[in-house]
Figure 1 (cartoon, one colour):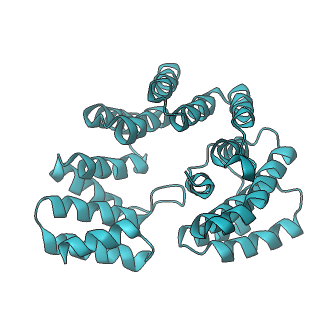
Figure 2 (tube, rainbow, N blue to C red):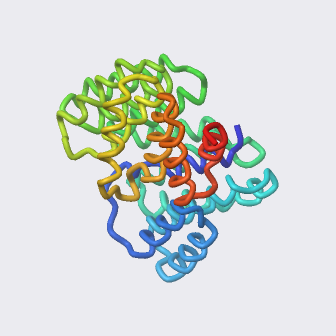
Figure 3 (cartoon, rainbow, N blue to C red):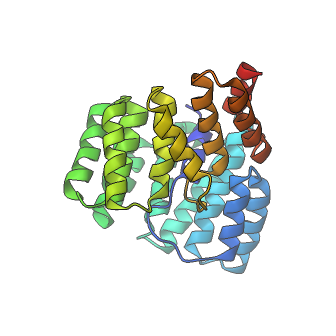
Length: 289
């Protein structure tokens, strides 16, 4: 696996804890989400220069560098690796309790080749520090390591423990649902966990998106999946939630699987107008054109 893929995942991850509002970060995140990571990095470099002891700005600069690496060649990834690690490490140094930054640093050490600074033992050290400060996200950290080591049973145990220790947490059920859907391919159980998420928190809009996503992946419950994604398209997701153009894509997949080629084509085209660099959407559009 390329180092940069892991950093990109960190860049798009939902923040693990609430963060202080910062217009510089808000602007940079919006740019990252619209495939303008270089502009985001420019803004954040200036922001860090203005507030060099701001851990959040260092963390998001590391994310921006990671996306730039992901979009470039292996040479580009190698040249950016040190910058990514330095920004995440500086954020942790400034705020040792900054779980998001520790998660980013853990991902770096876990997935980067050793020549670029990867080190599994250091990744596990970060996971242990996360667990010490935040047991909830400690389970997620060790599940991430387990999946990287091709040990889904250990990852499953972490998510089961997360739900068992936090039965009234919508977020715990949501994360377990994602694991069941994307890793176990246990679509029935994933649906049950998403239902539990919405029972506990009807305003958890990301779960509404995932109900549609689940319908597309499982090729089942199309009516409910379409309804969920149409509802999501009327909502106002934050930058922490799945973007609307991905809802368009999965809605198109649902239509495609029902043989509704024109409806599917319209959704894929809409998604690409919002973000043109989506390879899976381009391929889907070719299928129905």
